[in-house]
Length: 325
Image (cartoon, rainbow, N blue to C red; front, side):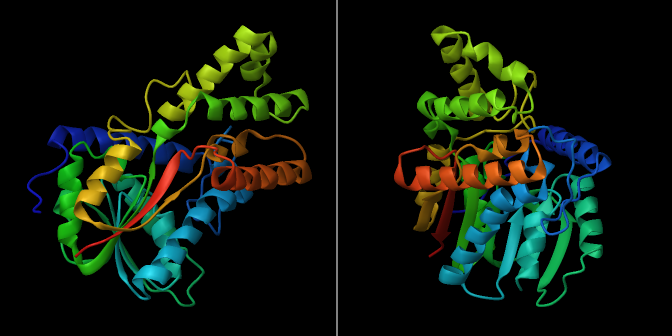
């Protein structure tokens, strides 16, 4: 299979990049440090895992753990990795800290500049591989790599088949494509009802950030059903009801089933496993003392993990590792 063109038109790239420039600049100005090991509490985030280093470890830290497990078990050590759509570079930085040689690209020039600054300030040098950041659209990437990585970037690509074909062209024979992407079509109103239950209990015990969001849903059956429906929309669309759009103009171009089908057409599937369900839009909303917040966050992360694995709670994300022939 041969890649033939850019998945974006030129104007689309500019609009997509501008959205991510704006997003990262607002967050850094508010105090975000995009480093999983040096992150600090940041009240700018009212419901996001970026609000607290503990939440970051429970979510992004676990993603890194899965990446490292899959890479070590199936791919090897001291690999060359192309991280596509790296944003401010926190996954790239962690992989390099574990000895991998990483090239990380993104269309957001501001995100790349912030990633470079974070790298320059990195105090964790033992066992460091290498890391190079570049402002570059994926279709202009060159070279051959042992692994191409998409961390929530593949679903932004309008031309999915061409993107996957291009990824194959950049991977050495026997190399791998690794991704972590959304599959919101699997998350239905039964799953949203669990989120509604958890947020309502947190509200009634004084541990949720916005009672005005939750309390109307306690007025009766019809009100609760409407609340569940609203939460389902929030999770499927990845935004609150007052947000005009998602992360960028091309957010959620493909659902999980479509991405998996495209990946399986091009790569031999090595592993496909469920990711997270709801904590990424829940942990940051917990309020209370530090001890209360930590206890609630750790238990909810544990519950989600067990419920996805054992009790049919639907994941909102998936991991895929495929091998190139």
